[in-house]
Length: 305
Image 1 (tube, helix red, strand yellow):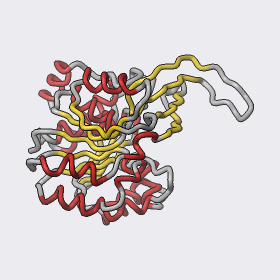
Image 2 (cartoon, one colour):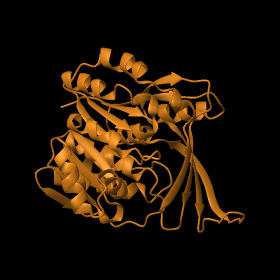
Image 3 (cartoon, helix red, strand yellow):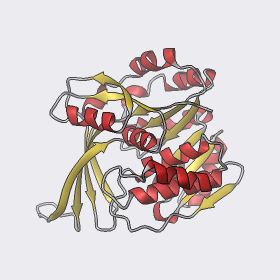
């Protein structure tokens, strides 16, 4: 199995506002707390993967402003190796509004991430790939510079015997059908319920799963938040969530992905991969930011699976 996890995708600053009410236009509402952290689907994933004991690397873009050193320090502090395209644009930023139940709304500006191009990623990655590595794509929907030529890129990764994981993420542009040509090359496809229904055009989860399975050649992993998670291969495998009070769900899906894949790379059955993913994500939602269990607790939990 892969000895290293490489995440390709978005890196940005998350500014989190904890509020009980979103104001209407022209109104104002009180914010209970403001905090900030490293963000982006791929960056969150890489940080989580490293925190639970993996050798993780992030390939992304970084801008030039007062946030740059903070993002670099966070990657270093969390032992995430990185290969970053240096842009003169401002860093990407997401404004995350979290309510008292831990649910969130996000407004984003991609900034430097708009300059991340597939050719640059290919030059930095493919020529040093040794094969049998896990390559994870996060935030691809938002990174338009990675779209043209992406299928041939995936074919090159498959020729190197890489395991390919892909998180669908929400498509703010509404061009969901762009994902379909990729599905035959993706080994593990992650998405949530909203993304599943948008992608398949169905209005029921089971119908959406069956429709997506007909187009996909890999394993589908559906994240359902407090309702747990589902893996769909030949059959549907369900696992309930751990019961924790959610303070902030921002990044919980990215954490779930990292934990699931950690267990998967240890050749654990899918149900146990779901269980581990749910547990680590359940621990994360109790906190703001990517706060995870200590490695000792992680090792102990994995050992009992």
